[in-house]
Length: 528
Ligand code: GLA
Image (cartoon, rainbow, N blue to C red):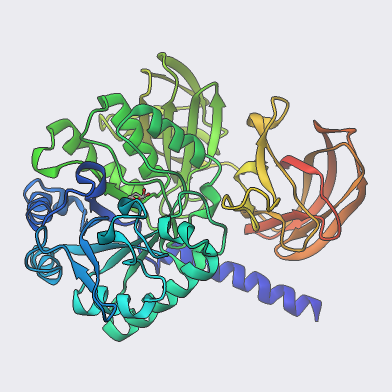
């Protein structure tokens, strides 16, 4: 019986991998949004000229499609609860604009709030008070997607905060209203959640993408802080559901190196790419960057996965992800220098899971080179290099806890103490995972552990805990083994235990937890 269940689980695992490779989901949204440049100063003319520019600049041809109207187009509701539009800014209503956008071969996006008032109304301007979705979920979806024919919606949370709504309940209610309208319309509607922090793994079940941070602004400091906040969120992007790192500031005041890092990281992390500048006055260097076909291919890759940190030296990060096929020959690699000085790093190709000679394609210069062992890269302050690398793959040995999938991880409620990454100088790559355990669901899982053949592997677990704690280990969903009492005498001085586990050829999952009490802090596992 157990074996039948196990075979079924393995089959399900294989099917999951096949699904990923066959891509039955949408890639991250490519488009433009009005907020960063125009804020509340939007008009019919502004939106239509941006749509024209998306076509005339070649951005549409490169793949950008959405023209998204952000906050600021309403004028309250009428006595029947119907949304009223600001007719000074939008004299012909909102449907005309969607029609205009569609005629250009593009798709149209609109904006609302999960609660009552919109962010831009400051909770007091009558034009934006009461225009949110709370209490009008189905009626407004009908207006936006059927009457006005929009294809995308971003749903903010200022009004949600104002009404003290529960994010999960309210966004789920909205997602049901969207799904119902999409069914009626017979067309997909893309749902973007804007709650300024990673909401929890439930969000993948209801939204196409979700903001992970507060608002971006046109400055390197902001871009750098968003990158830092997203480094350990990469496991939550996948299967057509994406971390949204916010609308881009490319084409505004940042220098070329900073723009390169901004674009390269948004691309490799599979974030939606929403241009935030004025496309009618876009300078050539920014246009070239936004339409760089290699970077766009990296972003739109059919695996749709995030890119964990592979190597870190100070503020230089090597991040990478598989392209086209999990554990195939091709990988995307971005080397970012977030520091204020030029830096040189020897990129370790074995940490990138390559063996032997590696072909390296430079996504900026298009130069083709070969490398073996290590690759020396010098990068100016705030700059990046981006590559496609191809070669024979080696088995990956090191899996960091902070890049694993934490089932209960969320950033909405700091008091809800569930598992989360933390930093310690003694931890591998400076980070580990703490607060695991005490419930069946508060676990850490690596979902894609590649084994070259079916057989037994030695696993070394790096852990720490001041008191004595138990640890349970599951492979592909089944409890394999565990340790009843582990301790290192300190919560951040790490020690190791070894275990032998059977892995199946191909992708496996390994889960660490203690369902009945706190689990040790986990730094990483090493597989041989
Ligand atoms: C919030 C969002 C922004 C933008 C504004 C509009 O701050 O995070 O992206 O939509 O509201 O008021």
